Image (cartoon, rainbow, N blue to C red):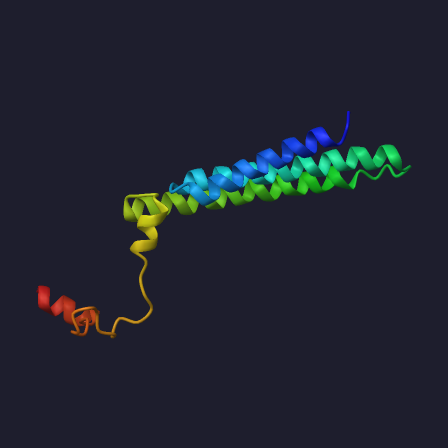
Length: 130
């Protein structure tokens, strides 16, 4: 088999994953797209490993070893990523990335907002509502 076939397939997989990362709004779909991109890299690693082992007498198969490390790292990444997404969904009620970006807290609460009035401190908010 020629090297071009898995290389083209890998490029298509990576492009699809990149489109998914850039165009999707749901955090779980973004994580799935990252996994698709990692699988495209794994396909390239194995294809080039097979191609290089045919041309050289090296039987180390470092591409396949790197693929196993990539799979292990991807499994850990998806586990941690899903835990974060589930925790954010429980707290905020959505996994939409744009809504999470809009509700992000700023670092300084004492700056005036658009109306020119200073925002009340958290202690002042508690006294005002009590």
